[in-house]
View (cartoon, rainbow, N blue to C red):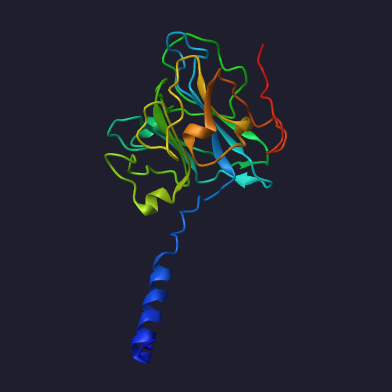
Length: 238
């Protein structure tokens, strides 16, 4: 068998190595805190057939350490509209300088569209004075490591890598055109909320797989679930 000339052999080896390097997977953008996540979203507050008078957003710390919410915000954008996350004061809630302990929730009361429904069964940990009026059926909510508008919506205004890096967690529900994974969380009604499975513990970075449509069940900081990975049943208001 005819041998390959040494210079050509060296070039072939170098080309193979270059190809192998080029095939290395790109690392995904890391969330600022993999432990903080949006655990529940309810946007039907005060509407016809509403369970409660007010919308709310619930955050959960699934990690083993306390996490500060200082400098963070929750930002809203419509499911398919052209408005950006947090584009005005009624699309963003700046979070206070508090520390959320391991295994605890943080309940944020948002806007009301009317008087239908009952008051939230627990006093919210934080009430926004310029509350977000979320859609009862579909929208986009982001937990952001900033208190200024993201300046994008993930669709008509694409989020840059720098903007994506500020998103700690994202939930697109209903017909939303921006969400984690392969599908949005379910379409909701005025009497249902999008709830993260496992009491907030399940996070596969796929909104369609991680959330289910259930009767709203808001939780606050003073209540603590069983640790992530174990059986958990949300409290039931009678």
